[in-house]
Length: 369
Image 1 (cartoon, rainbow, N blue to C red):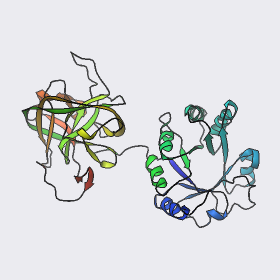
Image 2: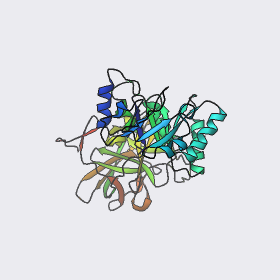
Image 3: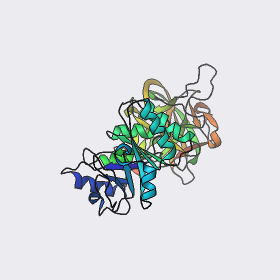
Image 4: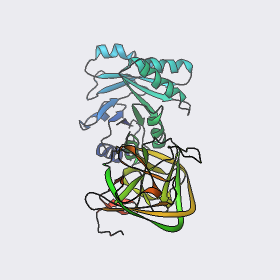
């Protein structure tokens, strides 16, 4: 989990509500410009003093971290020696090559580095992250973001991302959005072995190919099913075929009515997906990651209905293109051509426990057949 700092140095009528939201969302740190504004914060929140255009106070009060601008307040290492009761961080504004070098040194040596990048490009942040890792720095990089959308980008730079983001909230809800953006990974799923009970040619219909903006691994695909409580792992086109090149970004997923999983356990119909949508990539061990859709191709094709059953008796159905090159995954990453599936074959799937209303999990009676 990445660190989330909320910058409340500029106060207005929304500040009390934003602070209440921040505490409820377990925001990691609250940044204030005065010691008085840090008083009374719960112990679950790191209290960050970041004076702006003012001298450091003689008493740091309840502050856990003090962020300083060396040009105004002095060197953080010297201050840390004088005040061992608090941690110190260095603030750096990166506006040119010289200040970028300062930021790189800070990443390698300081306990905390709070960075502001003047220009919108993320290349300088990549350089700072790489410099800190190369020097085996043990401190934390906190990068200032202008909004939640930028925070999400910052968390993903070089795949490692900044250790944290500092955001001045513009509205109630920004703390919640920042915390959501900080979630670095999606939860693993418990994969289930499903036994095929039969398959039927059902004629023409529309199927969807889901083209993502990432390369799938050979043991990875997306979960697809006719029912919200049972899905089968459809493999991407990463395995060689005799008549066409591999397309490792694509999953020939299934008929357009089918469900697939996205973030926060939500389902979407394949027909709803479009450029920019998010789907959950899943491997045979149940490890997951969220990937973006680049395109969805919906075309009329002959369709095949595959039925399977779980050990607990749950029945699962998948309708997909009736063609040999459309495949699903079995235990250990075994690849099954859909047209060759027969009763007794074992495929991998997932059994969500809740019914669905507009894609969201809900506990209610719902019969799907």
